[in-house]
Image (cartoon, rainbow, N blue to C red; front, side):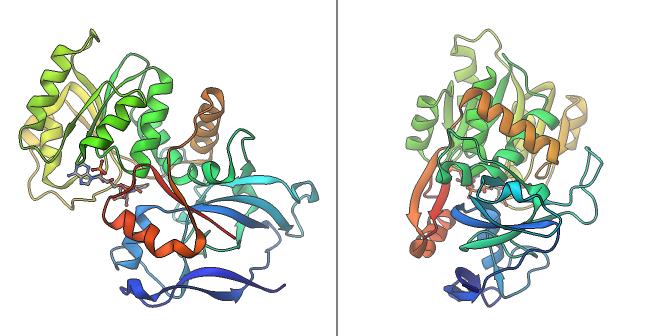
Length: 344
Ligand SMILES: NC(=O)c1ccc[n+]([C@@H]2O[C@H](COP(=O)([O-])OP(=O)(O)OC[C@H]3O[C@@H](n4cnc5c(N)ncnc54)[C@H](OP(=O)(O)O)[C@@H]3O)[C@@H](O)[C@H]2O)c1
């Protein structure tokens, strides 16, 4: 069989040009494997690309960075022992040797290379790892990009420790929901924000200490009250991890403790029109950007998941044919957790 079913994005800035169709099945280069995808997950990146809001968009392209499945074929330089193995894919290709920053060749699976929203994908053998046995394919597919980004944000960059207070903004988001699970497992006290009270409730059931609605103007004061009334001795926010940015970053600068850290990895609310630089230097705050993670971050993230048997929160899974509904759920922030498609 030399063809496969895939979701192909065929025309820039046109969401209607996202179509399920039959395309050529990929063939492995010598150092690659072909993974038969059992489940794939969406990331906001996929939506940004369909909206023309991502650099270097090329079409046609099969989107999708997250996936899990079986190794179906191996390239000539790859050991045959991988054949038939259940694997999870690390979507960060070509990070390089520097743990501080990715190489110039770094790219994320799903643009410019064809991604996981297909029956088969070609990836370097170095980017497949054995799927943790306790995770289903859907759970494994929900883990890679968000788990990697969240792990690096919380631990490699954020230096989060047991007993510290961390604020995670927009907890309904895919990365944020994974960070909640990792931070709780580590013994940190997690506070959250969301635009939806039901999502705050869900987060509290999953171990958060409390949460506030970022749509309320005085949410920073409400959060302060929450901290003062909490049973936890530590009444200050040590670390904030955010991917909304926009002018809201100035609230975060206000909230974080003197000497605290703000780690950010996205700008869902755009670029800030102003930045309270005075508070930033007076409070000696570290403002730290982060993107994806190294292969060592990915391995450490999987180790943390296995140690605590963390299962990602899934929105779905939805059948492969319902890909448009899945994208629309992400566009309207309707999801809680990672939106997953099961590939037939
Ligand atoms: N640099 C990187 O390596 C990297 C990696 C992954 C993602 N990203 C970026 O990070 C962002 C999140 O990605 P994702 O895949 O987790 O997206 P997602 O699942 O679509 O989550 C986005 C979330 O943003 C939250 N949000 C909306 N307005 C907000 C506000 N004013 N304040 C705080 N939160 C707000 C919403 O939370 P509620 O639903 O709780 O209201 C929403 O669920 C995107 O911009 C993405 O492009 C970057």
